Length: 546
Ligand code: CFM
Image (cartoon, rainbow, N blue to C red; front, side):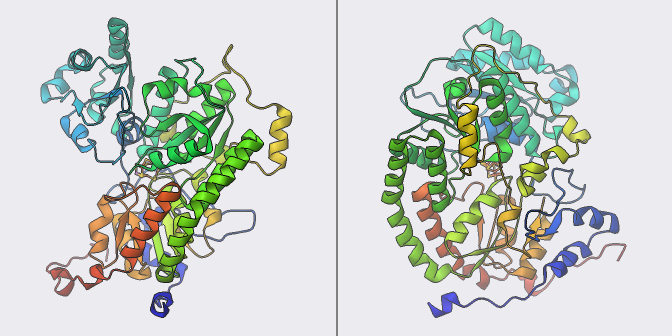
């Protein structure tokens, strides 16, 4: 106990760390990066400004992925009964094939295409003569083999470069097949500065081609959609378990373990609960404008955050029976969580963490670490926008640059027959008066301590320097960072794929997380390791400006 609570003595000043990170860059690069490295001031009502969602400087080894990854992999990938057909060279498909650990349950109908890899396998000749005919054939082949309800086509970089008209091909095939919804996504990898552009493109097309297709009223008293939950490591299964226990009906998850019909029926829910704000806020806004469904931000990462989110949903519906039920479920679930957290805290209290993940987890996971008594000393997103750092109030002041202009903004109007406000103006006002915030996300910065370092689009070099200087007890990021960090002697946890673990959401997920992090931060195995080049550098070099 005494050794566990003893804090490693590492002294650093955030200004020095920032300077150290920038020192190696040529002046122009340093100036640009400086705007993306922020020392959190935790100012009363104001949050400091950070630069985000801008191009990575060429030559820098970024942690980001491409637009195709955000569209095909992130948003559409976890939907089990849509055939996801990639129009492009085979590498784009192969790389995206079952690597994200989004789990599925084939359900009673058994329809699940997740384990397949569909690609047009473009060759040099297709690049020269065009790939439209090949795409048409591939759609026909997928249809003949599986008779799916829907086929989604994804463009990779060469498709945009040679100008294949995938939208006309899919429209023609939809008309020809008759009972299969076929549509395409212009999500070429280069389309935006990161995968974030792919989220937006996916949101637009799902809304345009699928949402609203099924008006059938589903059973259930308290109906929600869970937006921005992708069932990584089974997170969505745990959230569904809890919602079901509370008597809340989940109409559609966007998009963990989802089906075509869930998207098609999403407009029949009465509340949108948004988990990952970055990837899906567009759908939340569009569902509100077109159908009158309000949205609230929730977070099921962390046991306390889960309880808070459930209470929020219950408060929205305002029904005493639901409010009581939610309290009962929390009271049933929490004792086990508290038992485990009390135990692990004896070994994790005071330890430090860093997390650089995507566009929401670098924020959400701080909750879990907090519950273990651990402190996040530095964090950042790979591709989030300023609103994910500073809160949605900055949206009106965001600059629209050439890259963001590249992504289509669809105009949505209230549906003539199906727009139905879920609450009256009076009810909404009353909820707001009681502290309820609709359409709001306050971002990561207000939740981080003063003097912590918040870094956008962290890169390979900075990650290593940061670890060397600040020596965290654990570093969380993705597969590209994993081994270089472990070679520095620090345990590394993947917060994208969860390595081979999970779920980490909800109550049971919190328990899994506590136990795993306890093992990681208290194991010294990485610090015993010394690579040969750490003892004896085999090669050294300097930049020509040095
Ligand atoms: Fe949202 Fe995600 Fe994330 Fe994301 Fe992602 Fe992911 Fe992520 Mo990897 S949708 S922003 S594009 S929570 S795949 S499930 S873990 S980077 S923090």
